[in-house]
Amino acid sequence: MQAFCRLNGLVAPLDRSNVDTDAIIPKQFLKSIKRTGFGPNLFDEWRYLDHGELGMDCSKRPLNPDFVLNQPRYQGAQILLARDNFGCGSSREHAPWAMFDYGFRVVIAPSFADIFANNCFKNGILPVVLPVEKVARLFAEVAPTVGYKLDVDLEKQQVTTPAGEVFEFAVDVFRKKCLLEGLDDISLTLQHVEEIKAFEARRKIEEPWLFSS
Image (tube, rainbow, N blue to C red; front, side, top):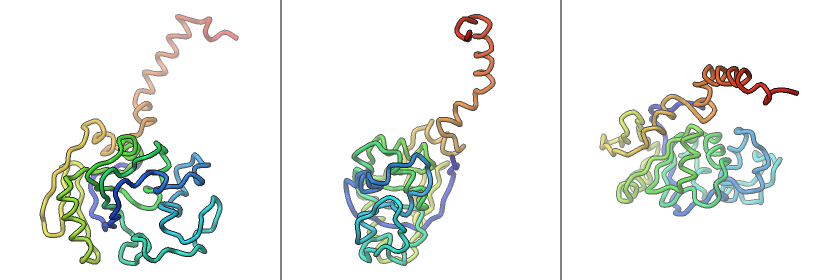
């Protein structure tokens, strides 16, 4: 997993509450277990004017000009600003896969669905929870400001605006460590690989019948 420490990134505002995972990555695209290739279908039903299916060439599909991610000023955005209960619905891990593949490394919202937030941490995305009023202020600042960027520092647990205003956020100590060091579940397990090997070798001696053919 790619580690995350600090990012100064362009912000894209998604001014919708209760965005569920089927909106983030619709169910017809869940047929692959690879973590890459989902970016073109992120928010598929909102980004395109036609119905998307697996295998379609998204470069030839008609774009919805009113959707925020299709607007030129938000191209290359790495921070998504959202409203309450972002990532609700099913627990599909494809949702953060699609967001990461598109280029997002941070999502800021007043609240997240628990499973979605956990999946973000496990896939290199930092979900930042800020109070409703602070998120509303960020929305108000993004709208009139082309090229609006935020500085997000996981080590300090701070979001800094272009004007220098600092918003602090809370994060679980264990999740913070894993994201800073780029450790997903597999990487965490592999930190104990020598202990695992020693355990297996000992079992073969102490309980040989388990390994007999």
